[in-house]
Each structure stands twice: as structure tokens, then as C-alpha cells.
Amino acid sequence: MARSLLAIFLDAKGFTKGDIGSLAVVFGLGIVAVSLIMDRLIERFSARGTLVMSFFGYAATVTVFPFLDSFTSVAAVRFFDGAFSVGIWVSAETMLLSRAGEGNKAFTMSLYAVAMAIGYTLGPGIAWALTRFGPLSVGFVAAGVLSTLAGLYVLFALDPDKSVWHVVPLEQ
Image 1 (cartoon, rainbow, N blue to C red):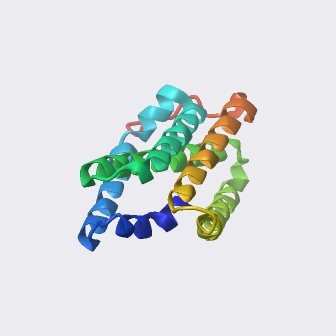
Image 2 (image 1 turned 90 degrees about the vertical axis):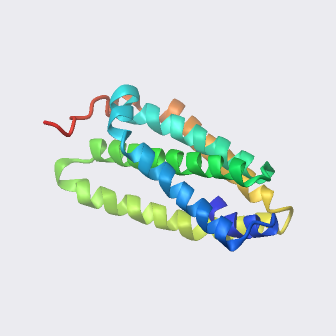
């Protein structure tokens, strides 16, 4: 939802096209930075714990985003947006793969890709509908609420016994 509003929102706030492009780079830097340590995060906190923290972190970044005005503050939030996004992706994939049977891993990841695509398809429509009733910031806050709800679901409803508690280091 929030990604579909991002460029429109930044343009409305007076950011230049160059600024918007630079903020996309900062988002990518957040992804790269956390990707490099995801194995250690999952090993330390479990895939489930990392997923919960990432959902809550993403909720915070996306919710605060529309209330920021300076390039520096938006860039800092975009970096953490990327960091928490990759935390969600990798820890969710890790949990799914740990629950999939040996012969079902590719099928499981295909279903995950379909679910992601549905989100990327429906998100902009939901954001569009929400912004008909209020300012663009409503879409960001709604995305934060959904991320918080997802984090609470994983925290309280997902069976912790099936989550991954150990990741084999790459050196082995």
C-alpha cells in the first residue's frame, strides 16, 4: 500500500525527481545492509522473532513517514524501511521453508510469490480507496496498522515450535 503512494507523496511534499530517486537508492542500501546479517539475526532471534521485530519496525517506519519533511529524516526512514522489509521477506521465507516438506519447497515458495504478487496488486487499489476519504497519509498509517496486526498474529497465533531456531552458517 505505502509503496504505491510513495512517489506521489514525496512529489506533493516538494521533493525533486532526483530526491525521489536518491531515496530509492537509500531504500536499497537498507536492504543490502540487513541482508548481509540476516543469517546472524535469524540465528540469534529465530525466524519468528526476526519476523515479529521486522513487522513492528516496518509498521513504525511506514507510519511515521508522512509526518517527516526533511530529506535527511525521510532518507533515514527509507533506509530502515528497506532494512525491515528484507527482514520480513527473508524471515518469512525461512519460516515457510522450515515448515514445507522436502518435496514441497519449490511449490511453497511459488505460493509465497503469488501471495506477494497479490499484495503488490491489491495494495495500490486499497491505498487509492483509502485516499479518497482522506489525505495521502491515511494510506501510510493503514499500512502501519496492517503490519502491526501481522506482527501480533505471528507473535501470538503462530506455533513457535515450528519456527527455525538455528541456521547453518555459510562456512559449513
